[in-house]
Every structure is written in structure tokens, then in C-alpha cells.
Image (cartoon, rainbow, N blue to C red; front, side, top):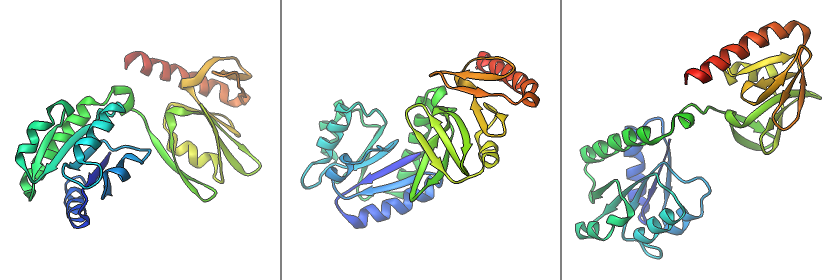
Length: 237
């Protein structure tokens, strides 16, 4: 869960970030001191605490721009002027916090925001799982639902994603321990996401997109059982 705080006063950003971090210990907290800075980020937050009155782009204009971009997550306005509340009904704010923000009120609003966020997340998105890897000098967060298969080649593990390939130094056995039961090690060099299996026989698995992955003879029976269990889970979901 990502929570952003946008206030032109650095001191208020720091204070709120500390308080929010204690209330939502597992959240990633980001702070911005201008609307421009917030609007330029690629990964928007799940919950946004947004000051209304800021120099440059106001909080109202930031919120309107985000809504125009189809951002539908939780918006919490922070204001020092209560009459500002009436100017923002069409922006579908979840709540308003009046400065100075009381600790008890902040906790109450955030707890309710998290509950609302959990209710609004689609089941399929809740089930998505991520892993973090290092590829060269880059730290990459990998969405496992987009990983079609992984292979070992020349001491590297290659992740074949739906739209790209990612290479990194790491053992396939270590990856196998992270990905969960929707994946199966069909060969010592290949780990397959059963979500993308189109057909299979005793020698190979054909994946969506046309890649053919060899099945080791000793792994066929295990793969067949794992794929049947996977199919039952999908039907029961």
C-alpha cells in the first residue's frame, strides 16, 4: 500500500509522514512539497493526503487533474480553512482533515480509508504477488502474474514477462521458493507459470504467445498433478 502526503510545508510533511508511518506500519510513505512534484510521478498512491492551499498548483487543481487521469483511489484533503470543503464535493474526497490534525482523528480516518481501500480492490488484484530482484544496478519489483516463465541461461536467470524479458544473477531454485504454487519446475532449466499454459504433452508445454518449454521425463507426472490442482483452484475462485 502506498500513501502520499502533499503539503508545501516540509515540516508538516515530515510530521504527518511520521504519524502515518506509525498508524500504517506496512505502508510505503511518500512526501511531496508541491502539486507539480506529485503530478510528475509514475506510480500514484493508494491513499493521498493533500493540502488544499498550496502555491503554484493548488490542491484542488491537483485533485481535479488526478481525477481527470482516472485516478480513483482514496483522496483525503488537509485544510486550514473549513469552508474549502464545500468547493470540492465533485472531486469525491473520502474525508477532510482540518489543521492542526489531531492524532486521534488522523488514525480514525486512515483506519477507515484502509478498510475502504481493501473493499474496493478487485479479487484478482488482491491475489497478485510481487518479488523484488536486482538486475545490474536496478532494483525491480516483478509482478508474478505477468511472469510467463523463467529459465536459466549462462549463469543468469531470465524472466520472460508478458511484455519484456528481465535478466539477473540468481538461482532458479531460489526463485522457485518465492513464486508459489501456481508455478511448476518442469525442467531443471525452466519454471513455468501455469496461468499461461495453452496445451501440453509428455515432452513439452506450449505457452500463450507460442513459446514451447521442454518437460523433463521425470517431471511430467508431477506437472500433471500440479496443473490439475491449479485448474481446480481457478474453478473454485
